[in-house]
Length: 87
Image (cartoon, rainbow, N blue to C red; front, side):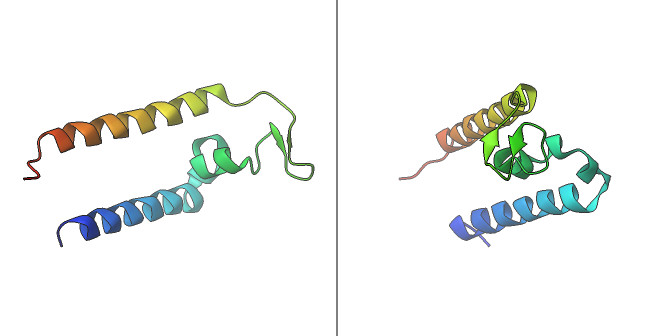
């Protein structure tokens, strides 16, 4: 499989693998490691899911790690695309 289909399939399975590892292993004890829970605020002490308000300090370290990982992914993809010849 080549091209955009391979990229989509790889991304999809990587996301499913991450979700499985976070929910089916002992890592599920630590919701701060799960980016899905950080984004939704579920089961975290800084978010009240009933009133949907922030009631405590945000997990700055986790958010910085997520932003850094995203920036590194973008930089890596830019580096890979620079080496490709699209002519």
